[in-house]
Amino acid sequence: LAETRARDVIHEMYEPRMERVDVNHIMSHMRGFTGNSKQFTLVSKPSPLPVLLSDQGLFKCIHGNAIRNAIKYGEEGGHIRTEATYYPESGEFEMKVINLPGPGHQKLMELGSRASELVFSHGTRLHKDSDLGKRSHSAGDGAWIIQKCAKILGGLVGIEFESERTVFTFRAPVKVYDAPSRDVDTFHIPSGVWGIGIDDSKIQRKLLRRFFIHAGVHEHHQIILGQNTEEISNFVDFIVDFVKRHPDDLFFIIADENLEIGGDISHHETLSGSECIQRIRSLLDPDQEKRMLALVRSANDSPKDLALYSSRAHGHMPKVPLRGLGVREMVSPLWLKRFPDVEERTDDDGAEASSDDERSRISSIENLRDLTLISPAELLAELERIDSMCVRNDGETNLNVRWPVLWDKLHQLKGDLKSVNVDERFSDTINSIEALRGDIAPADFMAKWLQIRRKVVSFYG
Image (cartoon, rainbow, N blue to C red):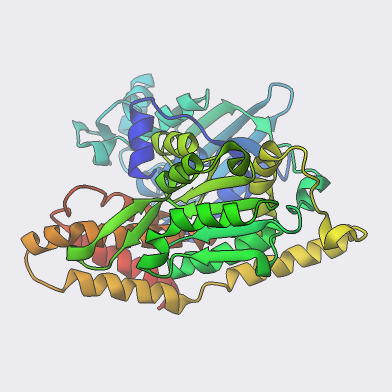
């Protein structure tokens, strides 16, 4: 889990984000696990499992920890089997991760039920020799944290050390995801709506253009800002003036939460996109403001952050890989809530709906275009810019002086990686960047940065 989310989970302040979760994809995806793909088997009942409505981050935390522990503590190179079952009569989901015995397994069996209790205890770790020792939070609290995750989902976790295997079990109540209706699938906002976006990242500005196209905003009605300090500084005044000069139009506005002004220490400032939206709404009269849907887009996802965005804007959106259907699923309920009486536009401005096969073909083409929108060179260029800031001067003191600017660049990189995080390839890297958050640079920052850099380059270099 990202550090902010983990903190909220630990203190039981986290509010689950219920969303579409394709458990078939998550459990069959083994990228990032240090094992041979032939080691893993997935058996599900029914097959495939239904798409569920749950908190994807918590589910991934539970599944990922179970697999990593099976690899780490089970037989080296041994077979790992995941059994997943959905029980429609009780509305529950159960996942079992089963591995062959590893070193010290016999001693764990001798502990009986106490072994299971200790596995999920705070600060306790079972080592290969089955000794129990108090460790730091990062070393021995993985099982304790996933127990917290399960509790938030209303579920339970357990582990059994049997004679020929170890069985980890997670069970929780779930709901089947109500697939978007054909209306959502074909949803487009009305013709003539202005789409105005702002982001200080070149990559995100490209993605915003595609986002607006997926939502139905024509390119000639798009305005994308954030290329320079002037556009960011004048964003509030620009929007207020533009809305007033177009009294008959509707506006769909998306603002990045962290807008960086200036690229060096002496002229560095970060504007809050949600604060800008709040100011815009306060400067417009009610009749002008009601013609606007203004959303905050951010790489942060803690409950505290999301509550703040919702208090300032009309809603918020995460930075996630771009998909046409996903965009329409996000925009449709927000748009219809804000403008329930405005007639939406169907595909091709009222033309006859395409067949399912044709619509599937178009969706595949959309996804391919989205995947190739961001070039590896653009992400590698971000790494080089951060490199140049890291080596500008030697010494921890100088690094701490530059830290506010450097952190903004790292946060921008995190958001860009989230937007291209297909198949979760960058999830660990994103979490590593988030773990650097703080008022000063971590003492071992350079070592951690080089590790982050290597992971990104390994995909593109």
